[in-house]
Image (cartoon, rainbow, N blue to C red; front, side, top):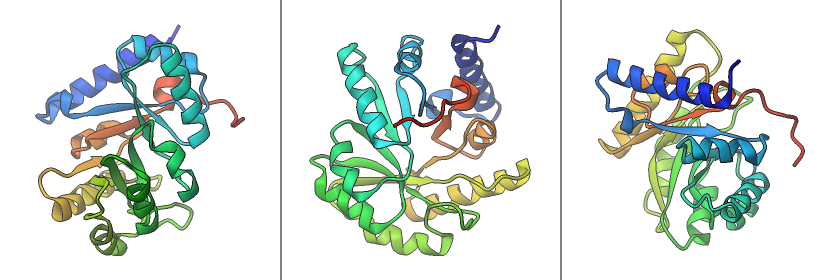
Length: 227
């Protein structure tokens, strides 16, 4: 019977194997466990298995889980916000979040910088396939967006994030490669990318992703949203 422990060991093993195959140190790939709409006990079990980076899509859910983590002594968690962020929720989120992966406007980046008392790592969300149903800046908008936010005092633009359109592996690979190349052109060699999820994280590793966001393959199907 498959357990959370066995899934965690399988995912981390696949990360190590794929990184090795393309000549990367597996330490250069960070697994973000996406635990939205999963109980805190899932986070606690993963923490005790060695997982430290967790991703949430909803501010209130992240804040509640962060409070539980403190009360349980899980003091080494790094919380990554990966969902759509409204400007009016920035202030509440900042004290607990490690990085924000879904900044899609200069307005939002400015609000983060204004409200923060420290440098917050952010990723600019890019709609690489220009899907109407998805958030993110279109490729033609990336350069002006980057220029508008790169010098804000309390943010650090680490790189770009994307969620490619569903399709075959080659289409996904091209989307990841495009994102990585855009990040390198604008930020330089230190640019990082947040790309790759349950179904395509191995391709993302091959294409240089720094952060992979894995939910279903790790923690199973999520429950209906109640928050």
